[in-house]
Length: 330
Picture 1 (cartoon, rainbow, N blue to C red):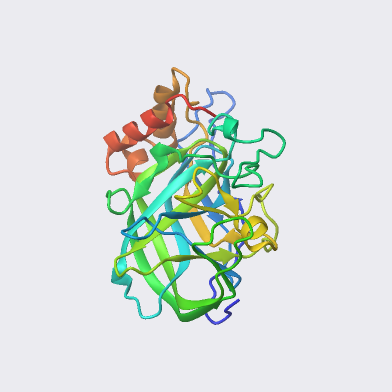
Picture 2: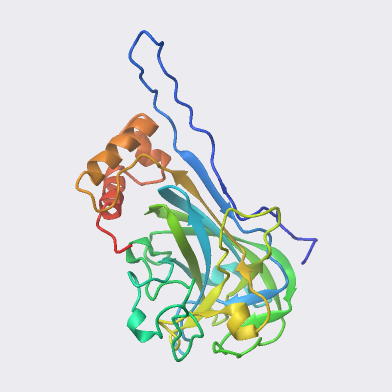
């Protein structure tokens, strides 16, 4: 690990502030004061020198390649931002980061993926994947996709290290036993993402998948994070990082176990936002009304809720929770 330019290492954990409810005296009716949503922070730790895995948007002559790692939500959460770490070719201007796209996947199951393509339980193998157990689903949650070119996220970037070397890379040889493409040295960059259209997700286990497009034809190599996680983890099980390209899709392969053949990897990223535990349940008829009522109570008004959660206006918040409240497959 590069100790000269390392960021603060924290465990994969979900940290929440304590909500305070003030009650009236025992003689009067108990009336709770408005309470702010709890802060949500999820961090995997400092980038390591173990691995850089291709994660790029499609472009002429280059296939889309996705790298994903898992994260937990213990309560319904509005995700307002993220941070990713990776390598770009040495000498590349940050202005060449043309697009960043984020997708979120559920955990593979018969409710969100085509299990008929597989051998079935317990391994769910396919001709190209030894197992799909604990992998991302076949397809993303379409309502959670955000992209810079679509105006649904904004980015800020900085170089952390002008010369950062990793021991292994996974690029185009995405197949069982394909192995590492060798070491690589490039500029270590930090990309901070603000979701101008925040992502609302119910509690559960998910995969986070960012992709980056460089306008100069170079590739973004997503950096690994520590494994095991220093200080313990609220993530159990930790499902490790998976990868696929347009040729392998809808299947995924484990970067360490399937491709490199040794160990398992996590990726270096963080997520932040606010928990909103009192909102409605997706699929129920009262979900939207209950959600808006709960948010108004938490923030002291619906306008304050929209502002506090990062929505551009009340209508944007109402629309996001209308989508959230639609029946889900899982």
